[in-house]
Image 1: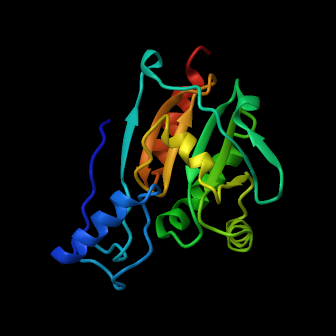
Image 2: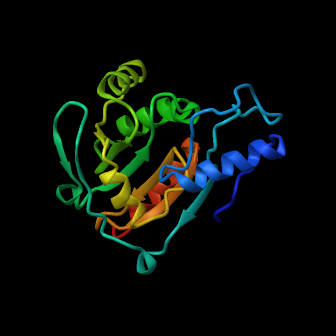
Length: 204
């Protein structure tokens, strides 16, 4: 599995504008639309997202453990250090991001299917206020928490361990809190399940 780069077919000037936005913003990923409409490939114009490429790291080559704390939209405190011993799936998202909405049902199913296997999911949202985020969670019946990362602290902590170049980005942490795998862009459900299964199997 290798890291790739996605390109959206848009007029040259628009491509340059989007590239500049992606380079300038820490979030990368789904940027606010600047052109409207749709590209030839069927992607909404103005949105820059990953191509679904996957990177995995062997146990000896992993970075971490990731130190991340934050407050959820329900007002609870999350500290990943307290989740050591579990496999953790982190997912960056925001409510108006098309691929985030497209993968939501799969993430919900994964959360439910692996709930008894020592797997936890955590969303990281740096854009939405509580109203928009909670509406999204109600719409998709999301059972796991998301950090309200309005100051970008959680995303910066994640970015310091593994490059987050798109929204959504999904990161799998092993039981020690180290980065085992990353998916840039829309996460394929079967691929993510395989990554989780492989990480669960380590040391079993």
